[in-house]
Length: 422
Image (cartoon, rainbow, N blue to C red):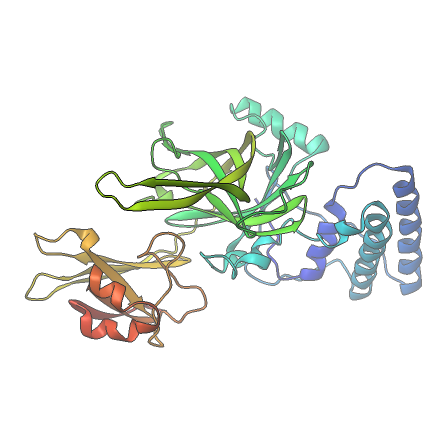
């Protein structure tokens, strides 16, 4: 897999512009030729020399490098010309076809960067992102031929059209317990404008986790083990949604697998219209009432294959193995790329669901939950070099959460402080 980590933003923007697909049109072709003539004139005036950027690809994937790299064969003047040229092309071509397109540039390869701090499971995803790119033309033919030989036809294509929707996987990143997908969902017909959740699109998916021995574990809603139920993000316009999908499940370890097949089967929007449902609880005379909202659903088959050959080994464990006289304690505290959690030790009688583990950062503030799992904590933007862990009864936790978090130390049945090596 090639490298392309966001360090040299100017070079990356040029690549994004070069790779952007444009609809065929005589007007566009004329404007493109006009733009190219302007590019050549600009380069001649600057005295720069024209050299092509080589983008190394393997199966359409390029890994973003951690360090800033120099563009050894491109002069600073030529780079400025390249940026200006890209601007000319975008301004003259995109604005001719549809002015709204300009506001969407660039989306592919930048979704994590724009949304990673705004979702309910935030993380520095762009820092570790693997950029996924659609393969086309002769390269697609070569890759697909190789894929057919391996029994995985079209596995390198990360843009799939089915029904009304086109779904693009833009980027992916992993930690030991899950994966995060940056997705672009485009509707030809247009999405519903009146929705109850303007930053969410719901989804159904089937995920086959593949093992080295050829077997697989299947995760889906039908068997109660679904890895994802929504993408959080925003509607760029009436036809475009960009979001981040968190795919994780209790006990899931990506290191147990070599890759996965992800099949999105449905995307849907909960609308603001609906009907009121009323009734009486069977065990009492108490009445209930709620609104059953309408849904707009988009069915299809959007299938993608991902390999885990770039899976990071970043998990850190600090073994604690401490208990008090009552038998309450903490076994270990685990930190991954984006999360932290602690494993409790309970005496024989209580159920694990009767207790909650909270974790405070080095500044004495509780870590937030990382998505829907209460005790999986987000470490985004926090100093977790030293953390304090509290084990609380459920009823005590409900009374000491939110603004009442300062009550947790006195209510905890066990507490300990843990330091992580730098």
